[in-house]
Length: 179
Image 1 (cartoon, rainbow, N blue to C red):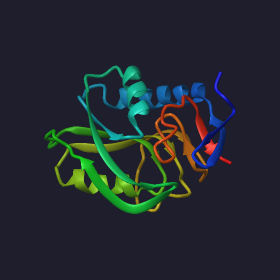
Image 2: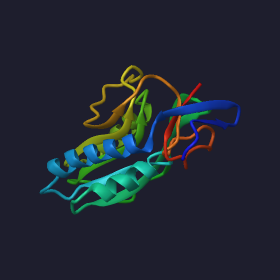
Image 3: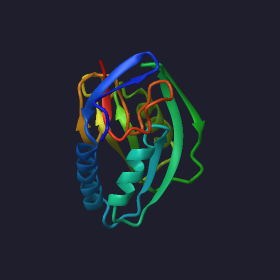
Image 4: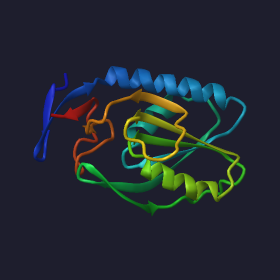
């Protein structure tokens, strides 16, 4: 059984969302994607590092002909968004005319996914949608339409299930919030 409280670096965290709820939310997201893309062959773009667990479990629930690729973009340092987006690992596939689903672990300010969207739109895909495990609606600073939302959360700093605090906590099965 997972501990109710953990410490990472200089911060303490408590369980906020247990794994069971996370997996149920992912099944709900997958059901929506399966229905919307049943006659299409989407390309999922998972944003590293955080979305790797979400992407893995979502793919297990997806019953479509589909492809997945991984991009690495970042705008975080410590517990705050820097507002600067840097693409570290780029997109190799030609996405012109393709149906794209961006997989994000969390959309808070929206800076990262908004910058990525601008880059992808210029490559002329047939469509682009965003699927996020977590959404912080009170924090979003850009005009974004997140079509597939696993869970909506308040403006708490969270770790676990792919999300980290300075590199630690990604491997946790539950999502924890800072105390």
